[in-house]
Length: 206
Image: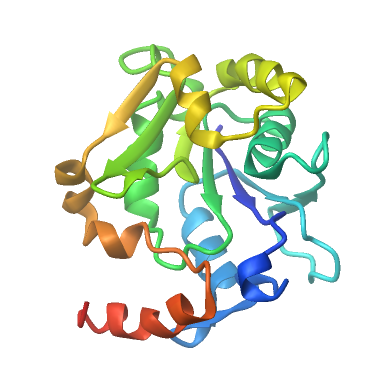
């Protein structure tokens, strides 16, 4: 089975502490958009952190960080520990344009549904563009749990540093572009101005 996880535990300091997954993009909240896409490919969806007050959703299970205060790395640790499936598709809660075909492609590179065979030698499948790695729109196997726990114990919480500790499969821009504009697929909302610019991105003005 395949598990998906939405990492929603950030403090959103650059967005005034607001729940970015509740922002409306093209008439729908980012959360609704993500769940709609993930339900097409995943058997379960884990909502990691920031779940208070949410309406229950079928096949969406809220979970808390096992080690609070460790940022996205702590959220990834909680997701992998709780996941029944392997691999786990991970997306940040502020990415409105992630698509089921793109995420299914990433999962397939790790051996979708835990099947043994070509691709299983990779622990992490991570897109990379000219902006760098995108570890919060990626796929991880349970083999990453041990390296994460070592980093959490040492107080090292940077997501991209983790990639040096695992068997990494990088997905380059040309491969990402098979599924749409890489800048759109991997767009996220860190600030109010970025939220305002998404409509222009949707209309291909950027």
